[in-house]
Length: 472
Ligand SMILES: Cc1cc2nc3c(=O)[nH]c(=O)nc-3n(C[C@H](O)[C@H](O)[C@H](O)COP(=O)(O)O)c2cc1C
Image 1 (cartoon, rainbow, N blue to C red):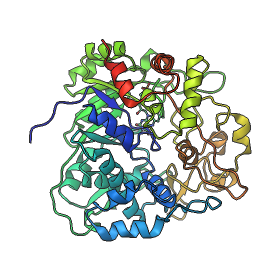
Image 2 (cartoon, rainbow, N blue to C red):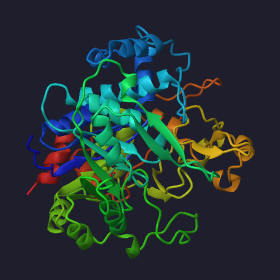
Image 3 (cartoon, helix red, strand yellow):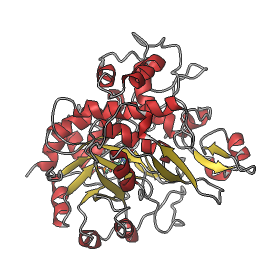
Image 4 (cartoon, rainbow, N blue to C red):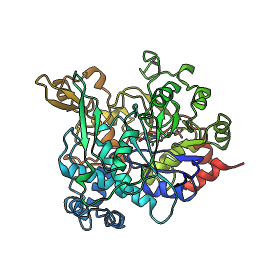
């Protein structure tokens, strides 16, 4: 099979479900790489089913899932005809663990399949799925679900994705896989395993997608390229102004008055070294104008990965109200995006847009009762008795302390799982009648978004972004 030329524009994977199947499909139809976010997609699909799957798209995708018993199991558990009672909370999917129950695996596989299938529906453009390496426990099952829908690219950052190429090789052959996972406070190695045979009735091989590692340094390119078993098919080189999570600065001690990280020139990747590695690469983080695309190409890049501009497009998963709030702030040049060193439970710096009705406002943050009920960012840790527990810095501080978590570092931790579900209109309802509040992430280089906001103050479509980026 001949390999298609790589795309010029990658629409970045943005969780949770900001990079929706609709957004990815539009970008792909235009001849570029549309990427869906796989992060927490099991929760997204299960909540949409509980909201009645009003356009029928999830059920349509599930009807193409290669094992209809599994598809029916997902529907039986989550689908509510006409939608759930709005006064009732959503039923959660099971939390990820080292040894998950089968229906937790089924919904991970099926939901990844659904989102990729919908993004690919009705055209033959290329589609990718983005995951975070930090959320290790879901990776094998989600890769497999996406592969069952014929995903063309996998893109993974927020960690060192050295195990992914081999996982993709094995899964495409239908072989059981194991993946080493980080367990804090443990001296022994821990693994998760996944057997494609858990979805009965499949035949192999299936297509092995290309893998792009999202990294911030040339050193990581050299490290991953050293061995065929860890070498990806290309790289997205993401700078520290990018939206979402950022790699910490090399000098972890350099912080501003608010304790947030300060980046310097030594945090910039050496693009000559990246080019000399021979691997194709794309640049990301503030590469959001036609001039920046030309600049990227002058460095030998295939093109660019763009996040924020697409996050604000009509087809993205953010609610329409949030998008308009951000666009209004951009138009009036009144938007602040900070690099928050303590917001994300992952410990990575995280970009936060300062918006009054969100958790970026300390008053709203203080009012929220801490709870960890989705648990994607929990870290496995070894208990004194040798068993494995799970902890998250945004859970109640007493619980976190009991689990030997560092409470000082957890003081300002945000529950990204619940906030990011709220960003896309799927916020959980709490017993006191409140619905979880949003927390918006966006890149801090606002040149491209501000220009586009002034051209389209009432919003724009994905196609407008592409035309803007490809303008002469
Ligand atoms: C709302 C939002 C969510 C993001 N979520 C993710 C994510 O889940 N995984 C990831 O690898 N990158 C994520 N990113 C980064 C983008 O994929 C992209 O690399 C980055 O936004 C590029 O910088 P730009 O925003 O200046 O265009 C996110 C970015 C934004 C704006």
